Structure formats: structure tokens, C-alpha cells
View 1 (cartoon, rainbow, N blue to C red):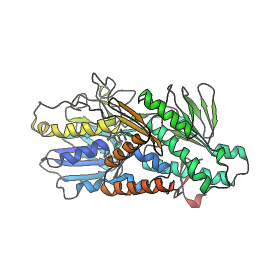
View 2: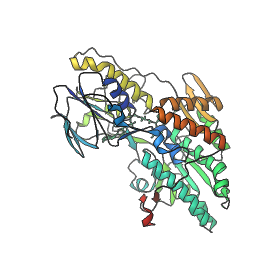
View 3: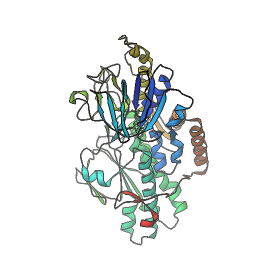
Length: 435
Ligand SMILES: Cc1cc2nc3c(=O)[nH]c(=O)nc-3n(C[C@H](O)[C@H](O)[C@H](O)COP(=O)(O)OP(=O)(O)OC[C@H]3O[C@@H](n4cnc5c(N)ncnc54)[C@H](O)[C@@H]3O)c2cc1C
């Protein structure tokens, strides 16, 4: 990977997400050679991906170039690489661009979409875990509107305008609300010759209520908001098949749709090479102790979504959201000077749950903050403030704030652009020449 040799201990950080970023920011002043490796050259702010899919914001405004962090920093290197394997015996990271030795390794590789082994669903469904995937979804939604406009057959129009979202966690709920707003405010203006009544949004959830990780109150309120927006909610509904045209559920329901969005679960981005005991087989998360050390490897750490730290309050690990990733990074950074000196007196990690939120569209959100549970306009304001503050980069914050104000004032979703057409048949991006 062409990183110069030095006399300093080499700390390799894999992943530039919430955990990786918050860690490197705090390790930079230590006497170490710091190397960050990430698949892409940017950090992606995943909580706002759904707004890219639904044309609310531009993709650039939630991405931040990781090389911005190495400005004026000595002994800090960034490499854009996909890590394929670790050799813990020889302390080597193996990637698609070469190998790199390490003294300390910190893995923050997050998660990917979990299709629970169903290859057919994986082939045909639309995931929304990365910026390219969110852009694919944006193209497909808009392509469906364009196709439906030129279709004479009402059944085909219904098929194109039926949006099925599987999984009613925060991502599914937010997507359903944003697509429903499209039906209300954009469709009648942009596609006046299309009967917007033909458009349906079906939200399918395996549990008995929407937003299962949040409170009963949040669930009830969001159900009310979604219904007001015209979203059809199907709880206790598990999708078993989808061939790109028809989704079938365990209880015999069928949904004819070209667009099935899969937000039903995630699985850790585990990297091969460690012993079987180092990770949980089902979730693939690395078992870590209260100092985030991977089981069986004292110089290897895992943080955030990819780490499973079982505790009394969280026997199955912390929720896979941004706060545990950030807080674990902060704690490890505080411990690192001691780790370098071989001092065993480390500070254990204690999670401070600051609460959870979801927005369901204009003026509507739900929030569980400690013992407070609320929903509506005030929750929506808090949701916006928290997301603005959490975004990485001043320019991104400014652009998002201006875009939100503009969209709010104009009932608009200004990024209704099909830049790269998405091929449904091949499930990949198509060039114009191929069409
Ligand atoms: C659509 C969506 C909405 C969400 N909304 C919220 C929300 O509202 N609030 C909230 O708290 N959380 C939300 N989350 C969850 C939150 O984004 C994650 O919990 C958080 O990103 C975890 O941080 P992390 O650092 O562990 O992993 P990530 O932020 O996922 O970062 C992992 C990084 O590792 C890189 N990587 C992965 N594999 C490799 C490899 N082999 N080689 C090199 N690099 C690799 C990736 O490119 C990525 O940059 C949402 C997630 C999604 C997908």
C-alpha cells in the first residue's frame, strides 16, 4: 500500500464511518503512524440517505472527503482500499490494492444489508445502505413515474406506481413518509396527466407494530402520521419471495410492484481471518470486551456496528446506531495513550443512550429521549437540529439547511433528476447508449 516505514507504532484504522472518523480525529496527536483505510474516499452520513432516494437533497451534501482529515497532519495516511482479509498471526491487512502490516488494528467496518440468505430477494430488491444505492433508488422511482405516464394500461400504471417497503424500522418509516409526500406534492405538479390515485405506498413489517425498536408511543404516533399520508401499513407480514414483479408474504398476501425496497435488517461487514470464536455467527459482529478489544486478540479492536459488546443492560450488544459507534471511538481514543504504554488500567466503556428519533415527513416526527416521549412538530424540529449538528463538514450543514428551508417553503423536492438510468432487468446502472 506504499506507506513508508517508520519507527513509530503503526495503527491501522479500517472504516471511515462514525466510529472511524471520531477515532482518528482524537488519535492524531499521539506518537504513532496512523493509517486509515476505507472502501470509498468519503464518509457517508447514512441517516439522510432516504432524502437522496426521494429527491430531497443532493448526494454530495451528505458525503465528506476523508482526505480532508489528513491536511497538515504528519504521520497520517489515507488509502482507498477494500480490505479482504486479516492475517492476525503476522499482523497484516490484505486488501485489493496490496498488503499493510500493523502494530494495532482497529476495525470499524459497519454493516451491510441483510437479505437473510434469500438470493432471489437479494437479486431483485432495492437496498439503501450506500450513496450509490440511494441514487439507484432515486432513478428508479423517477423512471417509474416517467414510464407510468406513457403507459395506457391502468394495471401496468398501478404496478409501476406501487412502492413496497419491507421493514418498518426508522429507515422504512422515513422512506414511506417521504415517498408519500411525493404523491401529495410532486406528482400532481410534475405529472398532471398521471392519475396520482393509482400510486400506493405499502409498508410491510414482520413485528406487530411499526418502529419496533422505539416506544409504544412513538409507534402509535408514527402509525397515525403514516396513515394520514396515505401509507398502507401491514404488520405481522413477512416477505418470503420477490421475483422483481410480485412479492409474496408468509400469510398469503401478494403485492405486484417493480420497486421493492429492502430495509429489513443488517449484518456486520466482518473481515475474514480471525478465529471462529472472535465473532457471533448470526450477526457476524466481533465479540469485544468493555475496552473494545476483539476476543482473543489484545492488539485488535472493533468499534460501532461491527462490534458486539455484551453487558448487563445490553446482553445482545448495543443498538446498531451512530451513538454507540461515536462513544466507543471516544472511549478508545482516551485509552489509547495507556494502551501504547502497555498500561492495563483502562477505562471501560459505558453507553449513554441519548434517545432515538424518526421523521415521517413535513412537521411530523417522533422522539424518545430518556423518559420523554413526544411526537409532532416539536419532535420534527429536534430531529432536524440533531441531524444538522451531526453532519460532517460546515459546507454540508449549510447546504442541507438551505435546501430544507427552500423545500419547506416551496413544498418541493428539487433533486428530481435521473442522472444515471437504472436497469431493472439487470439491476445495475445503465448508460444512455444501452437504452
Ligand atoms: C439508511 C440508514 C439510516 C440510518 N439512520 C440512523 C439514524 O437516524 N440515527 C442513527 O443513530 N443511526 C442511523 N443509522 C445507523 C448508523 O448509520 C450506523 O449505526 C453507523 O453508521 C455505524 O457507524 P460505524 O462507524 O460502525 O459504521 P459505518 O458508518 O457504516 O462505517 C463503516 C465504514 O467502513 C467502510 N468499510 C466497510 N467494509 C470495508 C472494507 N472491507 N474495507 C474498507 N472499508 C470498509 C465503509 O465504506 C464505511 O465507510 C442509519 C443507517 C442507515 C443505513
